[in-house]
Structure formats: C-alpha cells, structure tokens
Length: 509
Image (tube, rainbow, N blue to C red):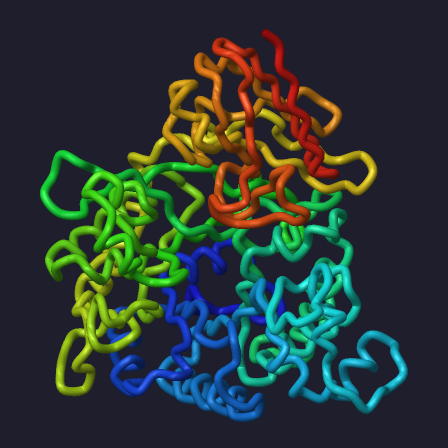
C-alpha cells in the first residue's frame, strides 16, 4: 500500500505525506496551459494542489465554473489518481455571484428547511448594512451564509475535490465567537464527503494558528502566509523569513490528541506589485512596504530566475529548521495582480519555460529536486517545537470552550518608541502577556507625547486583528485606532479580552 492511500480516515502520517508534497496551484481550472501544467505536476511529484478552484469574485456563470472545475479534476486524476485537489471558500462575497444562483433543494433539505424557489440573498449574508454595497465580508453566524458555504462545498466535492481552504476564517467568524456556525458547516461537509467524496474523506485548513473548541480542532491542519524582514545591506530586493506563531494543538478530526497540528506555509497574493510604491517610495521605504512594495508571489516572481530557485530552496530548508510541524506549499500557479509590472501573463507558473508554456518561470526542476530530497534530512537539525511556545498555553474559555490564542501582539506606529519595529504584528517586544480570565495585557512607557496608532493581532499575524476603531475584525495594518499620548514619559497599559474583543487603555503620568 502506498504512502498516500486513504479511504474514510486519514492518519497524520498520510496527511503529512500530502503536505510534504504540497503546492498552491491557484485557479488551475482556468489555465490555458493545463496539459503542460499537469505534466509538470506529475514530473515534480506534487501530490496536493492547493486553491485549484474557487471564486473570489465570479467571472463566469456558475455552471460554467463548476464544469471547468469538474474537467480539471478529471484530467488531473487521470494523470495521477493519488493527487488531492483543494477548493477555496473565501472571506469575500459578491452580490452578482449570490443573487444569480438558485438555491438547490438539497441545501434546504440538509438544513431541515422548507424548500423556497429563490436565489441566495446577498443582504442576509454580509456584516452590517449592505445598502448600496455589492461586496462584503460574509457573516457565518447568518443562516444564509451557512447555506452558501455548504452549497459551494458540496458542488466541489461532487467535482472530485477532497480538500478546502477556508480563507481568513477569524474574520467571517467574528460574530460566531463559539465557532458554532462554522463548526456546523464544516461538520456537514465532512458528513457529505464521507458518503460522496472520491475517497470518502475531505480535509480543511484556513488562515489560522488554532481553531479549537472543547479541546477539538475544527481544522485538519493550520495554514499561514510567510512573514519577512527586509535586508538593506545587499543589492536588490533581498529579504529573510521570520519565525512566528506555531500551529496549535488539540484533538484532531481523526480523534487523536496532537501537541501541535500540522502547519502549511505559502507565498500569498493580495494585489501584486504596488506601482505607486515602486515609483514614489524611497529604497528604504519600499523595503518596509509589504514585500518591497508588493505581495509575496509578485515579489518572488520579480526576482531573477537564479534568485527564485535559491529562495525556494531557502524557504524549504527554513521551514524544516524553524517549525518541525510545518511544510511549505511550493507555488505552482498563483495570480500576480499587477501582471504588467512582472510580465505579460497575469499568473506565476512554475513550469519550465517552453513552447507549451511560454510564460513559465522555470522553477519546476528545483521543486522536483527538493521534493525528492524531502524534509527529514533537515529535520534532524530543527529547533525544538517548544521554542515556539508562548504564554496562555492550552487555556479554554470556560463558557464556550474556545481555545485562547497563545500569542497576542500589540502593534502600530508607537512600536519604535518602545524598542520594536513599527507595525510588526509578530514582535516579541510588544507581545501581550496572559493575565488570566481571558485577558492579555502590556504596559510600556512612551517617552514623547503625540498621536500614534495601535491594534491587536492574535497569534502574532495580520490575518486576524482588532482595534477600538473597527466594529469587526480586519486583516492588515489599516484599521488601527489612535493612541494619544498627552505628555512625555507617559505610562501606558493596554488590556485586551479575547472573547469579547474589548480593549481598554489606561495612562498615568
């Protein structure tokens, strides 16, 4: 029996086999070089195709989307039936997508609701008032959103997909603080998959370090983009990777207690190269602007071929050394956003450049070599997993059973004044300390009066942030609140309550 075999259940060793041969192959179902893509995937030994289908904003009729998705699965599994294909259900929803889709009877039946002859209702799905809005953040506590998520999940399973990436899950669960609604949807899809999936099993990840309720993880593994630190003493746009929060532990969906669930890193995308930043920021300013003024994959694609190959190897070895429970999803296909800055084709493709794939970036052979080497050669030298442990470990909210985050960081423009890097959501210097009763706190002295800003990042990332200035959770650095320091040498104490998102600020002279 080969290492990738599973049916109904997936022990951790099998899950890690797929994660150790993982990739992101975003929107592979849309590729105009699919035959060469599949050739390259089989050649390298990739066994997990992350983000292979899904929508952010639908650009074609619903049935066309799923027909292309089904055809992709059929072709991939004809080439290698072992491969797992992953679909995405994201933290974004659009009026034109939801209101053009009739709700099938099977959705009402699954939720024990009477059948209604209608389309999905965008206004019932999003946070806040949707008046005059055509897009928004889905609110999973709304039954309508649960219907939408379940519908899409079933359709992907029927197409032959066996995995789901659930996006920035801590944003759309903002009102679902006990994770009751998202837990219900995931469990319903698991149940459907146990009867209808190719191998009677579907697995889930999201941008999360932990999603544990009453000791049980809702996810099979956690996933996060990488974090970087720019280098200014080298020519070109050089950077190094930074270790941040680990994957939390708990009882896995297989019913086994894990000290730390597996973790999957990736090069993420969110908009491509920032043309304005390239033209208007100084060298040093651009270094600190995202990934040298871009998103992760566009920075990577912009590097010379030899540098791309070296950075892939660096990322692979860095992952093995710095997080012994983690794996790296090699980029196979990823949107570049501002494609006109990087090249003529709006996707990065790892294929060896050839007449069959004229826009290939030629990382195929490097990926093949690294996957054939495997992680174990470097795991022998890995730092111990305990190096990633923080305060607030294995503490659950007594009312809901939700596992509290181990790492919570205060970040913003105030950070340089306390010895940290500005807007560093992963900083150890401004890490908040668990003080009991679901609360985290940090005290510091601000030497100069003035107006600054701040927010709180859970698990030390920018994927799930809160501040007094925003009614809902947000990602990135844009939602921070003001921090007005009235006098020089003011003592500040900020306290954060995780389950209620309450933030209090105290100051004394």
